[in-house]
Image (cartoon, rainbow, N blue to C red; front, side, top):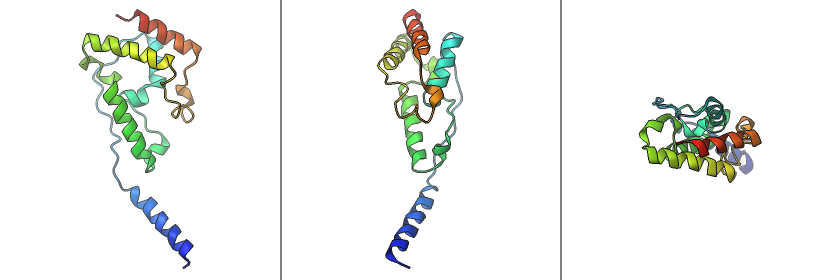
Length: 141
């Protein structure tokens, strides 16, 4: 066996071995929903819920290491920052701040992230989606 073949076999063994590293794909229970009009909720569910809720749907690449590790990390970080499924855990001031932050992130093009939308085109926000979120954010108590 040539050195090149040994190298390729070694890489293949490593690629197989890392698949054994466990990843937690279980969604915690949903405690509550964010109070939003149905049309706004639909936009949030399409663009935000995979990361910012306990209703994450894992994409195909979320089952292949090392991508699965990155997806798990992103979901954990997103839920820690804001979780629509545990909205009841935030006090009234936090909820107001978070709704404002939702609009700011959308307005600045930060959310959904640029690296998410190529594989999730349904998460792209159009002008109508922007307008819905803006009106909702400015009208929310």
